[in-house]
Amino acid sequence: MEAPMTHSESQAFRAAWAAACKVEASMMIIPSNYIFLVGPISFSGPYCQPNIVFQLDGTIIAPTSSKVWGKGLLQWLEFTKLRGITIQGKGVIDGRGSVWWQDAPFDDPVDDEIELIVPLNSTVEKNLSAPVRSQLGRIMPSIKPTALRFYGSFNVTVTGITIQSSPQCHLKFDNCMGVLVHDLSVSSPGDSPNTDGIHLQNSKDILIHSSNLACGDDCVSIQTGCSNIYIHNVNCGPGHGISIGSLGKDSTKACVSNITVRDITMQNTMNGVRIKTWQGGSGSVQGVLFSNIQVSEVQIPIVIDQYYCDKRTCKNQTSAVALSGINYERIRGTYTVKPVHFACSDSLPCLDVTLTAIQLKPQQEKYHMYDPFCWQTFGELRTPTIPPIDCLQIGKPSNNGVQSDHDIC
Image 1 (cartoon, helix red, strand yellow):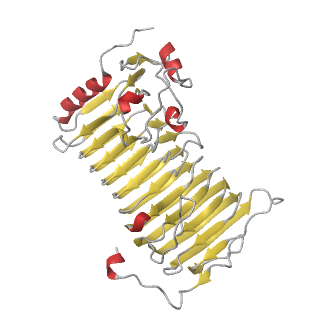
Image 2: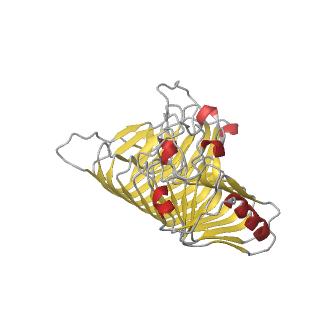
Image 3: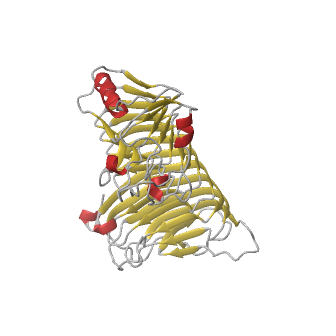
């Protein structure tokens, strides 16, 4: 086996980026058949030249030494304030998240002080894939990093790569405009906590397609400030489905609009397509289409929850994020708990919810399943549904709540 290099690969990555940053349309190459151990790093603008390509064909792994992370960091690999940045290739970003998920003591299988580059298929590579065991009794910090984050960037492309075992979210876009993600693979166990596949926040004009997302939380999470999002031809599972929200926590204002999710397969997920908001929030979600969603053994395929609460109890509040123009069409397959759950606000009911060609059947007829549930949900049944969703209230409420001007997006 070739001996590992003892110089810092993080430093080498920084030097390569500094050189690439100076040249328009340059390429930074991470070669195949090698593993690179890289600590937390930021590839930053705003003074970089545009259209840099990060060619990832090898494997980048995260350190599992607590002293590398200190008290915890929000991200591991970060790209900030760039114009035209592409990450492409057939390589792997491996967050080695099991030491974070278990909150168990751990130690590196290699020396804490050494960041290394080794050939794939070596003895070290085999050791890296083995469970990490404690020798020194250290525990990972409570703040778990996102594996790959883009912030404040324009014209971002991520394609071909695999992101696996992230300590928390796998891929995040925050304050970005013009994003293309395709042929991406996300892979983490279904019981890995808070490991969203793709997390979108304050970002616009996003296209995600032709990808496989397996994780322990939402396959795609769409948060406040997102508009013009188009997601299609994605396989989701395991995971919690594709979600808008949660929105409006701690009485905040949330604005989401023009979201299309179509041609999706979901297998063994907690939810299918979901919108979740907290009581007490403001703003709106409007113009949403969920179309041609094939579900298999999904607990609840269609969910609106305006009483979302991740604590034991949450106080009832009258204000809410307003939901309108939510369209469901051709959602078919099997469920294991309940086909539809619409729990909308008393003060601001859900408006213009339309259902077309919904065909959902229990995974096993002999087990008792819950009937569709609707509360303060108004709209239209454009075709008969299986099962009948008779609880949807047709038309509009007679006394529709109206938000004040500062609540409207």
